[in-house]
Image 1 (cartoon, rainbow, N blue to C red):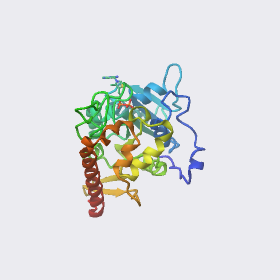
Image 2 (image 1 turned 180 degrees about the vertical axis):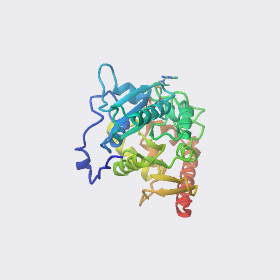
Image 3 (image 1 turned 60 degrees about the vertical axis):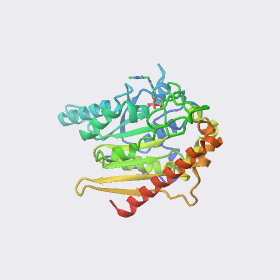
Image 4 (image 1 turned 90 degrees about the vertical axis):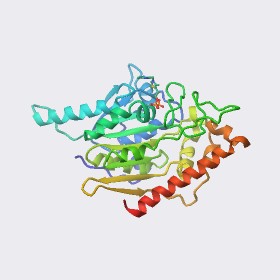
Length: 322
Ligand SMILES: Cc1ncc(C[n+]2csc(CCOP(=O)(O)OP(=O)(O)O)c2C)c(N)n1
């Protein structure tokens, strides 16, 4: 395993060798590219990355250009994990045979959106983790199928208006609960699972480094505010991300599984001093605008109860140490 570089501050981190270049076609203010840079620049090891079809892939590799200064595979919407697990197995086999093949440390990463993770890529992700391949899976979670015009996914939160769960006179938008993908991946006995947000960059970089160092499959759920479909001004992405963290809509926490004791250790990495009401988070985004009508106020109240209950649950697990 290569050295993990120590990151002191943002100024220093900004001088890292750039492995995901600018000039791509992601929307102004898109969080995907910020998250990707925070992850790929956190190591100096060689990287091999698979990326499912989605905003990141479409916008970073418009032929004949590419933003990727690492080995990179474009794969279908549904099989980023299958592609990277096969590549990891091939790398191991070739390194064993030697015959001129480099045995330099290499890290394997799969990036996919929430559509490519929570829904269509779920089976291939589950299988790759079960087989115990050594890779990091990162879900860029913008809570919808944004590359194809903002359809709902099983990550879309209740009340969110999307093109396939529109809000109107009779509907308040999405009706189904967002899946708890972080818990689902912990239940696969990944040794490291974490939730991150791009505005908490140091937390994100540290977690990526922890995932790089953990053997076997690791999973990072990266919440990714999307100005285009969440409907806020592109200059506000990091503000939306901060309020998302401070309202505990996106609690920053990690789960470490110990295969010897079968223990799950929960750690809350950030406790807001002043926990904001979810209303403040919703008010920043057009996709929740309709919820502020009196007839839909019960949706906001329910959200607040759900977020509070989830926050309490995570902290109870942390305190219990199991
Ligand atoms: C099998 C298959 N079905 C549908 C599509 C069309 N398609 C391409 S990208 C995409 C949406 C991607 O959404 P998500 O994974 O959430 O990533 P995002 O673009 O939001 O980052 C869809 C539906 C496809 N490429 N392949």
